[in-house]
Image (cartoon, rainbow, N blue to C red; front, top):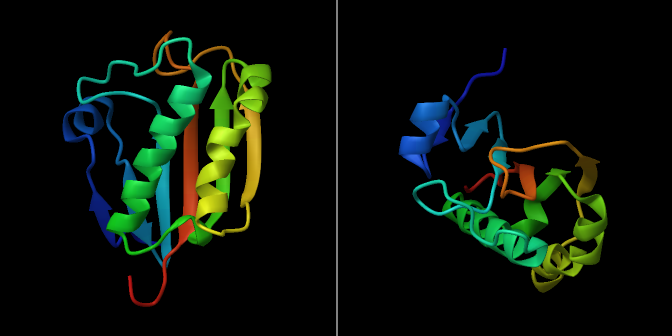
Length: 136
């Protein structure tokens, strides 16, 4: 039976209001709930700008991974939910840059187009699963 070893709250007010944990460690894995491009008040950063939203989300992912002693090379699974798949593909270099700069292989990934997300200004949400190292 899996158990949650540690939860780290990155947006405590939002997490409490909605009822989720942004980052959960369990059995050698780190799972990140869907991240949107938002500020501390949960307001969208980069309305109508897919590249900026991607960059903002992946910068936050990078910070969370680093907080757990790992990096993009440890990401094994990624799911991206988007309201505009064509815009995501066109701005995909923003995402790829983080893996390439880390000299990491791209993870198994699924990109899905959906009708809506956390709010009308959000263009995408990214979930990550990463393997924790023995020292993290």
